[in-house]
Structures are given as C-alpha cells and as structure tokens.
Length: 470
Image 1 (cartoon, rainbow, N blue to C red):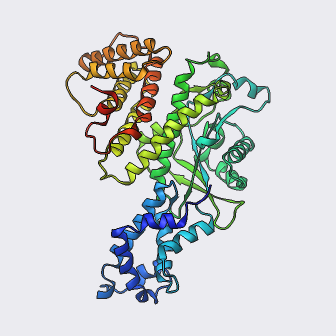
Image 2: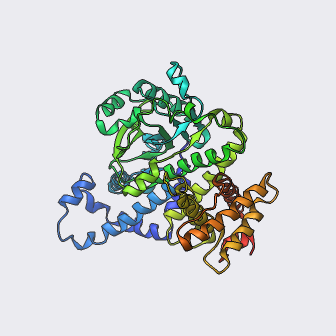
Image 3: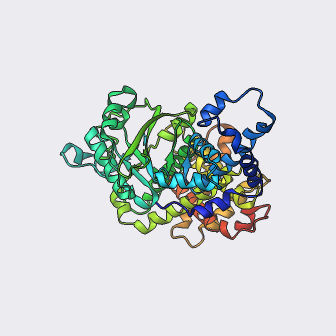
C-alpha cells in the first residue's frame, strides 16, 4: 500500500494554526542541543523552564496532534509516542528546514506505514456445512475478502493450521511478510491465549505501528466493529439467497472447544526497514467487560460457498461499510465538527452498534426486538418527535421501494414496532417477529441512506429528513 504524497500530507498538516506553532519551535531549536532525544529532554530539562522554553510543550503538542490527525485520516495509525520521538529529532536537527516533511520521510523510508493485521478471537461463530470435513482430515474452509481486508475462520484446533490461515490471509491481503511462527508458539504456551487454536479467528488488515500498548487501540476497536458488522450483515442476508445446511454440520457443533477467556488480541506490525518480517505484539484489551463481550460474541453462521458465488453482492455491502468507516473516522477525529456529513456518519455508526446488539445470545427475544427498533430509530430519524413509529415505517417503505421481496420486509418491520410498543409498555410481547426479515430491511435501509450522504448540503439541519422526506 503506497504512502500518500509527502508534500500533500505536509500541506494538510501545516495549516494556519500549526504553522505558527511550528515557527515557534524552529525559533527555539538551538535550545534543544543539550538533549539527545525527547526522553532526555523530559527528564533533564531545568525546572522551572527558562523563559525561552516556556510554551515549547504546548506548541510541540499542537503540531504532533495535527500530524497524528492527518495520518489517521488516511488510516495510517502511527503511535503518538513514535511521532513524538521522530518529530522531536527533526526539530532538533539544524540541517533540516522542514521538520514535518522530515518526519514523514522517516515514516515512509522505514516502512512502518505498511499494512499488517490484527488477530482477534471470536466465540459462537461458525462456518455452516463444513464442520464434518474436519473430522475427515480435510482442511476447513475460511472466508477471506481481500479488498475488505477481512478474513475469518472457524477454530483450527492446531497451531499449524492457525499459521497456515494467517499466511493465506496475508497473501490475499497483498502482504509479503513471513508469519512469525515462533511468536505464535510462545503465545500458545500462555494459557490466556488458548483462543489461537480453540476459537474462531478474525483477521483485519490495518496500517498500525506503535511503541506502547494502547495508543492505537481505539482505532483497532473501530475496525473490529466494522468487521463484525460485515459478518452479521452477510449472515442476515443469507436466508434470502440460499438454504443453510443443518446446524449439526457446522463448525459451531463439531470439534468446538472455544474459550471465553479472552483478554488480549495479537497484532502483526511491519518491522522497520525490513520488508519481509513482522513485529508481533500481544495487546491487552483496555475496554469494559460489556464492550469486550460485544466485540467477541458473533453468534452466527456463514455459508462460504454462498458468498463465493455472489461476489458482486458482497462487494456492495463491503463498499457501503467502507464508506461509513471512512466518514466516521473523520468525524471521530474532529469531534467538534457539526457538519451534516459528520453528524450522519456518527448516527450510522451508532445504528450499527444497536444492529449488532440484536444478535446477543439471550433467552429474552424482546431484547433483540428493542435493539432492532432502536437501530431503525437512530438510522431513520434526526431526533425524537411525536409519531415516530409511523414515520419510521413510512421511511422504511421508501428506502425499500423497488426491492424484490420488499412486502415481506415491510410487514416484518411493522410487526417489530407493534412488538416493541408492547415490550416498552408492558414488559413483554406474544408477537413472533420475523427477525431475519427485519435485519434484512435494516441492511437495505442502511445502504439506501449511505448511498445518499454524499449529495447532502453541508449545512442541512436535518439530514435524514433531507434524504427520506417527512
């Protein structure tokens, strides 16, 4: 994956505010001569600072944060501690007139911007109809979508098979680096990483390089959420294109010794100045127990053959989610941006969260109904107003107009809202909602909205009203 043009990145970074801070730093670079690096400056600089150095930290952070923001907007997740060291060295170097440009050149020349991937354990996920092949000694199927940077596989029950799967994923992702099998062997010996062979594995391509555990984790988690959203969507849409095999033939039922002891993920990052090797890192998950449970639980089956025959349809779903991921990342990096696009991408991301929660394993079917109803409300309204149920049903019909089978999907969505009203007012319902059809209706409505975001006026106050009408 090519690094963006350095001059383009530099122009994005050196805006009016950043340029002033950069000039402040350049005017004081001679004061950094006594310090070999940023760490030495932090520990050895006099306290209190001399008058000439006051404000140095503030202006340094202004430029550092802008470098991070611009790189992250291009999905280049270089750790803040890495940028700190590189940029300080460039500012200190009197022979370098453009420290930002120098920092970017070092990133490019060292290769730390190149893609690696995250390996994350799932539980309750299965590949339908192929589990019996494992008992016959044949290789189990995986599901890899190269252009989406996603690969998922049922439990391997073998470190050798895990390594083979990772090598195949890397190959299809276009990453020509060796899988560090010695690191995998080390991890397998740790009881807290039994999931490497016992659980289904999710692999997501990501351009990340970090020096500390958690500095890129927020972005890794965002990518994992979009990856699991894709899996949930494909599983939901399967009933409309193929008949699934018997549940007992799937990998959820055969040779399944999965563990719920999931506290880490593994990331393979590019080794600096080495185009053939990965750096391997075991990273603790620094999220709440609830968020961890939501990330790991993917209680659905995928029929690989079905989607291998419908590549155009898969690509459309992938492109829809990729568009939302790109838009949401920009909104995430600019939390004060209240433009119509940023507001709607935040809503789309929230709607996906409730869609995923509708798959929770629970004995209370009403929980799925309520989560789906909330997903529709977040997706199809700008805010609460009386008559929301009728408005959402009307907008669902509009979004599904012309879609084959839309009558059944609209009927299921209407039944969902009747059930939802009963649950929130009485705590229970006897209605039997066709949840699969409701989920399909959500996916098609979601794609309808996403396809129309680009045409929105930047200053519209009610973007959903603009897209779907009253």
